[in-house]
Length: 101
Image (cartoon, rainbow, N blue to C red):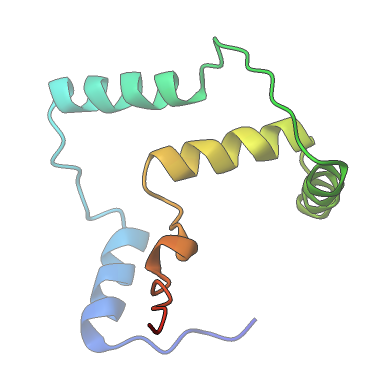
């Protein structure tokens, strides 16, 4: 693997990190809050049942296999990313066709 091309600021940050010169500015309350949020994100305490077309299910299973994940985990990840704003609905950005009268 080749070395990345870093500018002076990036190189200085990398060296400071590698020399353990950087310190976190998180206070204990914020750290606890972030830890609780992370734990809640990965807690799976609800179950849902959905109906999918065979075609969509097969595509999900194929994609999960490529990613090395169980397909249910892939579906949960996709849903989490969508509701947390990590996925864009591309169809919502398509212009609405105008009908000529």
